[in-house]
Image (cartoon, rainbow, N blue to C red; front, top):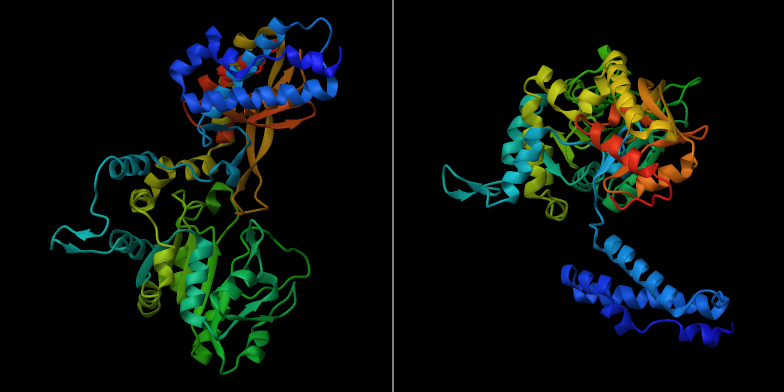
Length: 475
């Protein structure tokens, strides 16, 4: 069949719109969306027919039916919200691609409260006058960390940028070569420093830096000594890195402020749960660091935020920097962060109610019990369509935190018998809700550590539906 004859079998836009199935679609979806989708589908068919032609046995009615089917499926896909719920079965607790920290119940409730009406974001209810959006957070942060003052911006990169811009614009900042980290998304400490207007002075070697390296670099142009905690990688072997404590001693010797960028930032010590020992914010503040920055949505377990604590004179200067308005937090972040910080007033309570901490500290015994129950439910539902087993695996902290930490965990493994694991993974990933696991040895690995309580039944239903023959999943 020649291409022109094939094109005559393609229905017109109006004909597709008049079909009963698409007419029903028009009653539910915006007309502009449906019409645009019809045109896109027809354009795609037109291009295919021009280049490939149509099979002899494919008549006009069959082509029309296929076009209508594509319009219905594509309209459904385009009607979905782009930001959707995902069940995280990857075992990566702070998965950057999946939004990092899951908020505690009280933090979610706080966001809902400020979202559903007005709130006193910048109003002092006692005096009736304008207040500060930082005030509720500052009191909590100073109480928790022992710092004199605090403020919050929209992420830790912004916190570093603001601190450097305020304290060192037009002057020099000394930092060890071994601490010139990339903080994610190709953003690197030297680039953030250049944007701040400060001049970077590198000292030491990649693997070894000493206090004397800093001493030799200090001049009358030096404004700040910077310590960057290498939370997203580790060097081992022939290594010697300067500590924040050593920089504080050096800063006092030369009358220079010391800033510590902690990156992830701990408020509780998790080393007794088998995690690597990391400096807490309280310890760094107590060491004498003048400014300390860290993230809100990593090990803190709260919303995305850049938290700055330290000496009052420096924090007050940052609050007055015009850049602060451009990187300030909104009411949702303020509400979620306050609720999260309040949980830390009772550390034992924080370990139970903050999902990030609960996942990081879950025992293998607990995870094995959950995995066995999930596997049994899955076996009953999928029958002979897949081999369901449990096995020990290793989870990761994620989010650029604790890169060497191995978290012993348990997983449910799915080896499909009627498809391959890659196809099963694709179907689950594009379903509703989406399910993210990992593939190994032609098995789907579902790490139970990051599956939230209450998601097990949904996960069973998703896997069962995905294993149906010819299933493309529109759950």
